[in-house]
Structures are given as structure tokens and as C-alpha cells.
Image 1 (tube, one colour):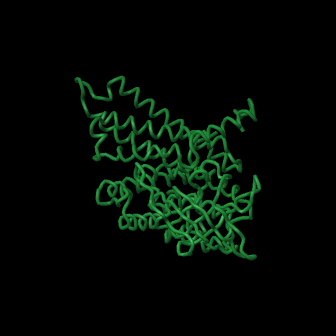
Image 2: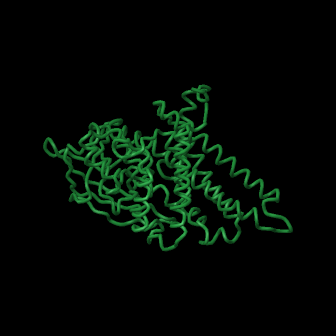
Image 3: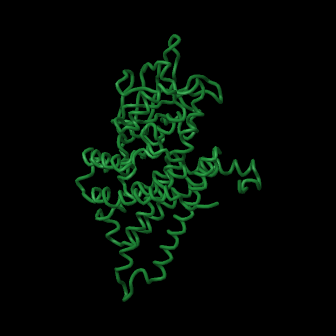
Length: 399
């Protein structure tokens, strides 16, 4: 197990790091760069995206022939971690959720004609996308098979969508949508995936749901479907293969969250290192206090462990393994270390850590969602436990 990066990947890592430090962080430091939902405003985003493209730091997860960098999952882990050091980093380089996971799903599962129509504009940065799965109770939440939104056949080439979705990330302002709907009562093959455009009639955004923290572009929306018609040509994969598409998307998307969160956790600690190295208290630098050193050591260990877990899961995915238990373990651990690292950084910065002079309070309000998105921690613990019960001592095999 050699974690040494190739010269090419190390060079790319350094380029991403320099771009974040030199180009993105100065924009992030300007309060005028934020929109009303505490994310990067359209104009600075447009300029930084143009710079990212010009510097060859665009769509790292997409094939070279479609304008991306063609990185495998291990390469993505290196790139995304560096991009995640800034709140604006991933979206400026076209590797932010939900577009990131949506592009990966479309690249793996769409036909070439569908890729040209639905995927390429997202890769190019001309449109944003959103995936519609979650529903209000008693509909689908952590269990997609309980989905109530229906897709009913109309003739031989059309599906009619009726139902209710909520907490749909990025829906406001998105143009290309991926929709999961029930097409049968089959226990294991009851869902099908569809593609539709913002301008198609028969659906509406009821509201943008207010949340406690800063939002992704497009927010988290509540959606109503009332007879949306989708041509069968816009069906993604086969009828009844919706759960398969969910697993394909979420397997990698859960891990790319971890990659970005590791970058944010490192940035949080970065925000306190200079302070504890220069601020004196009781005649000593804060960094000389044993208690402070213990706090820094705990954060460093957690981030180090999280990186190893993420890279292990990435390598398994690249080998063709579904890596379900590895992804679930990384998702739980990294989501928790994110919150702990930010809390540590705030504590070590004292009052300034709680202020808006630093990005830490923004991160602290953002962090709780990490334990909820793409599967709550409790669901991932179920996955881990089921693997342990079925595999026994082989759970810890080295293969």
C-alpha cells in the first residue's frame, strides 16, 4: 500500500493548492463576494470559473474527451481535498455537489445521445443540475424503496409524473434534473430514473426551505409534480433500475463529500495554527500549553485517519469494488471529524473564532449537515453492521 503520489498527481495537487490560495481565498475574504444565501455570488463565480478553466483545473472527474481531467477516484481525492480548503473552491472548479455526483452518474450510465444533451452542458458549466429523490413522510427518506412519487406509462413512449419531493438540493436555478419515481410495486425493482428540463410543464418549486447554515447554490427546495410528461427517450437506464442508479451515484458521491470535507477540516486547523503560535497567555505562547497541544494532536490524528479511510475507499472503488462498508465508514468518520475540527479551531481562536472575521463560524453552521446528506450516519452504521454480521472476521481482510 503505497500512498506516494505520482509526479503528475503531486504537480496537479500543488497547482490546485496554489490556485486556491492565490485566486480563490482573496475573493472569499471579501464580504461582497457572497450572495444572499452565503455562497459565492454569480459575478465572482463566473470570473473564477474562467480562470480555473484557463489553468486546466476544470471538471477533474470527467473524461478528457469531454473537457475534464480524467482523474480516477484516488486522483479525485487529492484534487478535491485541496479544492475544499476554500468554501468557494469546489464550485469554482466544477466539482461541487450536486453537479459532481450527477455528472458521474450520467457519465457512467447515460447513452451517448443523453450525454450530449444532458451531461455535456453541465461539464461545460453552462447549466446546473439537481437530483430529485427525497420526499416528505411517509415517502422516501433514507429508504428510497418507500418512494411515493409515481411515473405512469402513457402510450408506448411517455411517462407521467405525479408526486411530492423536498430537500432537493440545487433545484432553484438548475436546468437539468434527474428524477427517481416509482414505476411498479416490485419489492426490489420498483424505481426508475428519468431526465427532464426546467422548462418542461407539469412541475413547480413550492418553496426554498430555510436552513440553519449556508446553502449550496439553488438551496434545498420542496417540489410538486402534477402531470409532468417525460418521453421514454429521457429514461436513464432500464425500467426498474432506479435503485441501481442510486447506488452508482451515491457510492462515489458520498466519498467525494469526504474529500471536500477533509479540505475544510484542514482549513479550520490552518486558521488557528498561526494564532496559537503568536498569541501569548500566562506568559507562554498558546502553542506551548500542553492542553492546546492535545487539542491540536487530536485534530491532526482525526484528519489523518479520515484521509486514510477516504483513500482506502477510493482505491477500492478504482479496483471495481463497490466498497460499501469502506465508503460508509469514511462517511461517518469524516463527517464527525469535520465538526470536531471546526469546534477545536473556534475554541483555540477564542472570541475571534466565533466572529465573522474568520470563516470558522460559517463552517460550524455548515458542518451538521455532513451527518445527514447522502445517508444519515445511523444508516451507514446499519450498512457497516450488516457487513460485519455477514462477513464475520473476514470483515477486516486486507484485500
